[in-house]
Image (tube, rainbow, N blue to C red):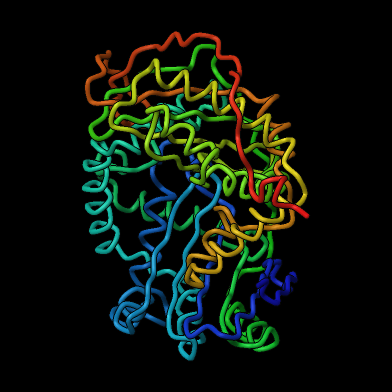
Length: 435
């Protein structure tokens, strides 16, 4: 069931997206700021990530225990944030009657963070500990290796997690850099706010209009970033702990708006494990056990999509067979019928409806929310796109190199040219099932 929705732009320049979910007991809010790790000033790697942390440490109207994170957690809700390459998002979910109080805290911390020296020092230590852990995190290392395949812009290879060393010893300079970055980018014209709950659309709009009054108005937007350009030799083998994985990624020269609905529907086809499906075919041939999709990068002029195939007995040779079967399946998808597309669209909407309000907002902002689409846009884009391949496993031998501040043990992978293979796939309902 599609939710009643409304989108508008407020006088501050903030884009507002409202969703009325009449049967919900929980309500959720997500605010996205159009700035991320790729926008950090030279000399301050990790500054966007540090500012994300700092906003949770207290604001003018809600310091100490009244700030958003302990308040939401104390009420049994969920709260978190994420810093991506070109956006930063803060979000929470709570019992619906408490949405107004949570929203007031969220917007106050966005507009008026305290940024005290003591909390800066504390969060620098937290981020440094996080950095130490991420240096051994398989998914983080794999994504870094894939993104290292971008020749331009250089921001894809730049350190962005942050550490005690990168932030330096000059606390006053760091505090000033945080303040300037906040003032430059955290304004209404650079924000989108999503609200979802059982409140009516008019009630949600009223809550938003009241809460955003403290936000600075729109100012000059960031200049569009240059679209990524890939290195000619970018396929690699990578040593990481955990199960073997084959990452097949596509740098798509299309905006996220042009592709996300199409990718979501194709993803639903791909995740099906019924007889004759892509996943069942791969499993029956002993090639992999699981398949997932992940956005590596989303922007106004490019999208970078990764397929992740996982299996205990996965090998580089099997990875090439997987890609051949995937290419054949992708072309078969072009011939799926309108009834079959409607069937998988319904499955995507059913899967989405099972998510909590917060998880639905996260999918809408930077994930896989279903919309009105067919998979043809993705098929055309993938056929014309540059692909990057990465095979990761514990037994890989490789030389150590550094990218994004992480040590990668890898070697170049001279994978053979892959062509589609002969294979028959089934999409549902089967044509014989259609009256």
